[in-house]
Amino acid sequence: MKISIVAPITLSLLAITLAGCDEEGIYNSGGSSSNEFTVSSFEGNSNAVARIDRSYSTGEREVNIINIVGSYNAQNIDDLDNATVLADNFEGLLEDKYIEVNGRTVKRPVYKKNSSNRFNYETTYRTLSLTGVDARDYNTSTRRGILTDLNNYTVIPNNVRFPSGSVCYVPVVSSDRSFFTFNTNNKTRYETLDKWTKNAEERFSDNRQSSTTKLNIGSSNQRKAVQVKFFAINNDPEYLYNGIDYNNNNDEGIYEADFISSNSTAPNEDSVRGFIDCTLVNDVAADFLEREIKRYY
Image (tube, rainbow, N blue to C red; front, side, top):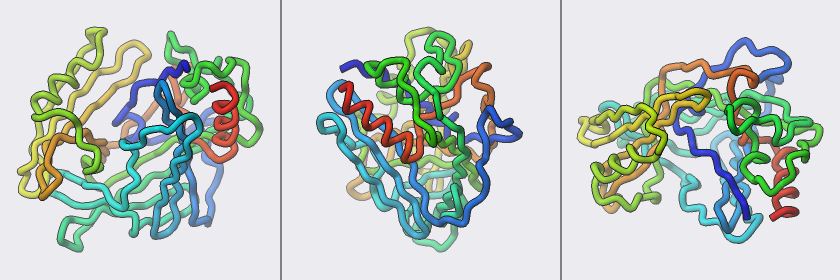
């Protein structure tokens, strides 16, 4: 099985703001009064592939993991009812029960631990038509074009195209404050934050420039965090990795976290100039990918 998984972009695909796109680029397909919304994605390794459907409705979130090939180890997928949140002088929970959905906008307030204090965090999923797109719409050498899972699951022929009605979702995040969030079930193998940092600083072998930032976060800023940033080079985007030293009752260890920034960053909107990540999709595109992965793997 040949699977080429593009390295994760922890920050740059989460903390983005999109504006002024024309009909051939990312577009907003209009408002909706619906309070149910599902985003699908695929994860795989050398032995297994799974489809992950994340369904949001007012008051709840459901994560459905469907094995397509083999049995995928889904330990890194956040399917808990809540996730830990750490910020400057703040510790709280991102819980499923307070979700609000309006069309493709999902609001998830973050509540401070043992308090009614909260801050707002929401994601609006902009849309891009994938009708007729195939693996050749993304250039692996220049990293330009529309990146889809047809590029990640390379046994599927290059000329296989997404059917009519296929749509990808690009998340646009806004938050009252910057924060780290992680699943306390997903402890890393590292004994110390220094050991995690050393490994994170060596994740790229192309001698690209990077920076390492140490932070104090959480209640009374007693938690330790490290951000390792690899700067954009040529057409390759910026990568950000986040490590947390967390000790709370039985949840003691080093965790790798997502980082949500309160600062808006304008992304590339032109697939000719750079790449657009289209690995979050609607049910039409997900059903198509599931059939093709089953067929060729």
